[in-house]
Length: 154
Length: 188
Image (cartoon, rainbow over all chains, first blue to last red; front, side, top):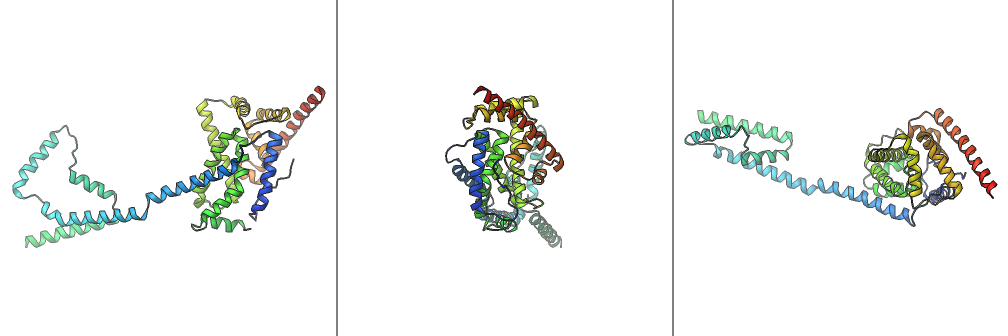
């Protein structure tokens, strides 16, 4: 048996590695009859490095800074729009009977839930918003509504 | 030249990571290939498992707790990846434990990168007849030249058990190989 010394306790030296690899190749070839295709190791090295860099590339794209910035900007815009236009979207007293009638129709529709487009937007938007932002939004909204009602009642 | 602590630091450092990983590949690619090849037999399978091993190493580096040496940790990943591959193959081909030795030889003889003469084929036959664990222990000691302490970490088998299994297997192989040599000489 050839002495291989397959240990790297304290130093990592690539020069020793070359002779180690050569001995290992000879041993497997001479004693077990195992071979590899020509230039296999250099091709395999390129393949592995390529796969590793692809993996890193995909990760970078998913969490890219640009994407995060755009998501945050879109979220803030939607939250602002909801905050500003919400009072205007409140139904007037005249519209209430029509809304009640729609609700009854929905209930009669085999009990299937129907989500309004505006609700869809809010649900999708909520995916991009952190819990803290939602809490902050709800707090602000409640305070504004309460103050608004208080002012109106006076 | 660098020590293991520094090398690990470089592997975890975003700026140095690529260069350090390339060095890791230089150091371990061939020795891991041969370690894997003896477990999964054919070159094609060894190539797949080797790639998976390095991808796993790259992904798991941030979680490396340094409870063992980097050397042992990398071998353990290669060994586990090979076992995972063999298990999947066994399930796919509905193989029982008794079929494994037979399959070992079939795979070997069907591999275009196996060119064994009579003696090499005989050694392979003896290895294929060994229980899987004993064969792996013998190969890791004899061909990969790993320390028993390192093998204990990789395989999770006590050092004493590894030593006794290895010496019994060596005796078994020597006895059988001697018989083959005598047979070959008598033919000449």
